[in-house]
Length: 340
Ligand code: ADP
Ligand code: MG
Picture 1 (cartoon, helix red, strand yellow):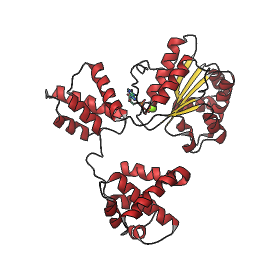
Picture 2: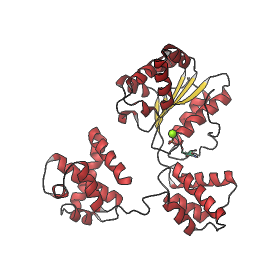
Picture 3: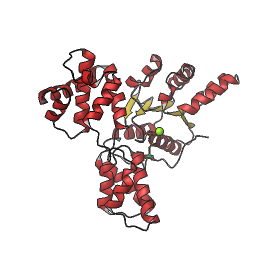
Picture 4: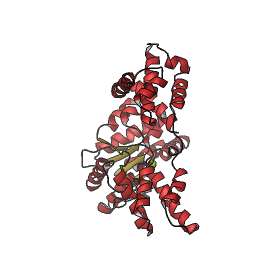
């Protein structure tokens, strides 16, 4: 049993700027499994952006083009459970042997192996065996290999052997296409301006985009209401938190100072201590990112600085994100808290 879901195909995986690389690399792998430089093919990106869909699509396509190949899709979580069971039942060798017989192994959400050294070890051996024998490995992860935590170095370095392709957030045009595709599939007609309204406001991920349009269709048919922008607005509010909640500068200051265990006065003080400066610069950066305030206004609220200081802070944050890994982790943690 391949565990593949044939509802996830290339045909219904709409292409856009955000997924073009991953999608075409997936297609190349499906044409010649094990026979391209993309081995392993690692697809990474945030939740709901289509990693699982694409992983299945590749497997389904391989089954179609190369029916003689054994393809297996498995989530890293189930893989881990199976491994743990095999240790308990003393069938670890059978477990390894089973995986060595596969031609195309697809492991979804590989970040789940973080901190699980026994499973990483066994996966390392299976990976090496398959790779050496020209078999194809396809992996997905919610992070790029450089950002994965608690995964052994030797495994990380193998993840980087082939191609790591990121799936990014879909742009407006792709979001419209995805929505139209769902409407077409379900045989529903909705005015264009409403479709565009939904695409404009639901930017988080494709899963929420689908959720929003499906709820909208349901609402209109249950209540026999026409699908208007008004109705769309009501439905969308349940899906997108940011649309209601304006993040304020005060709120950003609180989140950032709590995170670094500082009080707001310290954050706003004239202190030049490195950690305080960085916290202050982060607060300015997020204020620019999440509020509509002017640079001057952000500066005056965060420690009575001028607009040039805020601009400098934003540039510094951009630079640190490129060069300082630890800083990047802090940045992402805070960003997550702010977008919750
Ligand atoms: P992830 O594994 O990255 O969290 P999924 O693959 O589960 O995301 O995708 C979430 C939903 O969005 C699925 O229903 C999937 O079919 C849909 N989806 C994602 N990307 C696309 C796309 N490019 N075209 C059509 N549907 C998509
Ligand atoms: Mg997934």
